[in-house]
Length: 229
Image (tube, rainbow, N blue to C red):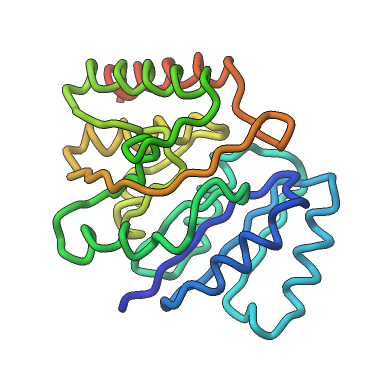
């Protein structure tokens, strides 16, 4: 089985980072875990330093940002540090289950897809109402402009070969990285396959970071890569 690089962008996730890394580490697959800490201020860095000392985490690498750069920069740094044949993005908030990596890998291993999206809302999962409605609108907007038929482009779970991610030449600094990845993949006519996944949404009080203005930025990015390239 080819090695999988798991990119974990982290910002102020002291409550969950240890648990998600334990879950990833338990997945029986050849892998490396690359955590990119985006200058956390809540003790996350201390937790990561303690985890690094544990022998069972010998596949873990941690990259520290000296100032807060945004999720996009963290994802890009993680990809640049990766050595696996395939790469997956994994948020640290426990909303997504690492045990589903093999389901995401299958279309890639069978050469049916260039980019795989783990879609959240096909199994009856809901999440925060405004986020769900915003997701539906933004995905419909992207589908309209690109003539695609996606269900959930905003999902965290995006998996592709390192070669494909490199070919996208990603530049986004913030949450707009989600729109950039999919818009560029569609523009390049990459084959995209969606795989249903489990989803355990958290609230803003539990640390959810997406806000309404991130949706506005998504629209700008979709328009940019549809018409300007």
